[in-house]
Length: 308
Length: 308
Image (cartoon, rainbow over all chains, first blue to last red; front, top):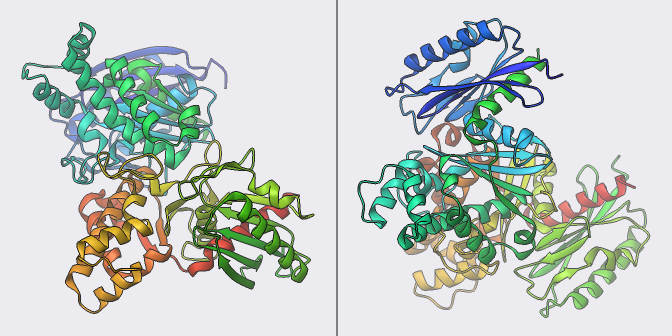
């Protein structure tokens, strides 16, 4: 594969649908985003995604494959979205087939955060690692597991839901059915709800506002962010004990609240992880920014094309 | 390899040192156990293990390799025990080298619970699975991760410490440095401490006493065991979300308290895991009994012999 080859990636998120056209070497020929329909209904989303694919194929007719990144549990064998906490009406949605019906190209479906992790491993913060974990802090909290340089998918394609590790078995109820999941503290809306309460300010609209206050010296904002980092750190310690990874890459919108979050993570990792593991682990922010998911979907598109 | 070939396994536990001589097909030619010296000092243990190996080699001179299973974090590259919560004085102990100095056979070192998991995968409950997790409830709580039929060791050989997943980030302090680890609730001494308190009986000597009371209809004993199962179940849900495994094998002495423990596990798995994962997961007791660790060490001994 040379830089002449390119694939199309589509990243379906709770807020945006993002597209990218990427060469095998990671050169981004195109990127774009539109709003996810607020209904979040499968039919509405499938219609919009089909249109996006048609438009892209007019401009980029030589694409070798299409990758779709979607939230939720992906069933690799049946090519379905089984269920998705952030799209409650999605049960066994045949997203891949619906897109594949409209094109003459191979189409692959992958969990959105697996796509993000693949991209960070192939072209981003985790380049060159063999054992890497990724956490994406967005509308939900997702994860990806890279083992010996490859995405780990589990027995049915649903592995890597690192946001649904419980850090408190008596904790608050998460949308997934579990209690005290990382997502329940760090998913966007839960994060904002807790921030509004701890900072006594119901007007907060986004995590970035909290980090701006922290940068401007608001002690309470700093403490809140460190506290969220400590919760995440607790998940990281469990993940270190489970995986003995080289690196944990942390991305998604919330990762940009920056230093206090990472300070909280490191505080807990230093206090609670085995010293020999804490010494060598790298816990780093993601590098590729908000297009990582679409880039990773394109990486999946390459897999699709190569497998033909 | 035929049944003519055999390997030696030594399983170093907090309570016993167990030995086994096993053929490639899993036929056990010999098994034995002696008490672990109460000092738990490296020198004392190394001396006893060297003697055991000499005796075994007299009787079984054709062994093709020796595997040692040891508690704690194993450093594969340097062949050391880095640290071990149940043997606090063990820091960078060169256990493999100390044994290898006395014999003309290849010697491999592996975490004791990795050995248990290997044995259950090769010859026990997990035979034929590709994605299997194992938890061993003993003096400590250990784990093993089998991915695509092979032991997952992580970047430095310390992976699979599933007993040191935290199920409560504000929970009680574990010996490993983390808070609220599975081991802190299910490791033998912690289990007994909690049982004594909940059953208001400081005379309890072993988990089996609790299960006997449960079998005799003691409602409080049943509730206590179910409660411990629920804690373990919470860890199982996180592990299912992380690994999407086919099977979780639960072994070690405590797994024999039986039904109420498994009822507690299933209660939480049914309530809190993704329905699609809960439907297909198998959570089963280990099959090989108390020699699984020594059998698995012998499996590691085969690896050692084959790699020569």
